[in-house]
Length: 271
Image (cartoon, rainbow, N blue to C red; front, side, top):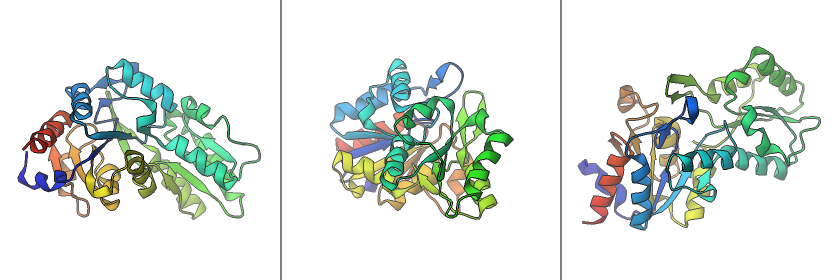
């Protein structure tokens, strides 16, 4: 464990984990756990630290996503997971917005209780193969036809890692719609402050008492730091060596994987 890490955990009461690229790599057959991560989650919980999961996963409902992780052996429950679709549904209802959905088929059920007639906004998520020209153009037409276009994006990632390699993420298509309509999207999910603050409030801890562990330097690490948290980047998932030379975002520490991060945290908590 590197010396500068100690400052991250002096008052540590809560841990926030990203999921994809930290706990497991997604892909065919549901994906595979990253070695040591199942046990690492168990060790955090056994330590008495509070734990929440913040994910930008939008290719399944939260219930189905958590069930998949449980089958992999993870000690995780639905109420510990913060994901963009449920948060977006609350925003839509609170503001009387009726979405045109450009999302993955498996996540559509999250929006079952939201009025989708005569859309007055667009919600875009990681739609994968649903990002056809036809579908993206249809979303563009909805937006451009509105007097005050509202685009809500479930995260803004550039890419993520699956077992067969890197895949373009929602942020690419969000930017295309922003550019076409000359608007700025409202991001629900990381790196939005409100997203991290919801997890912190649920744990009952202040930002300086929590640490984020993620594979995405900008959205996990940078987002958490802007919220007042410390943040570590794992060298798994979408991590690239150049991340450690980023001009504007620097993690409070870099670790090879979640297991190594938990080793370091628990060792120093015990000192």
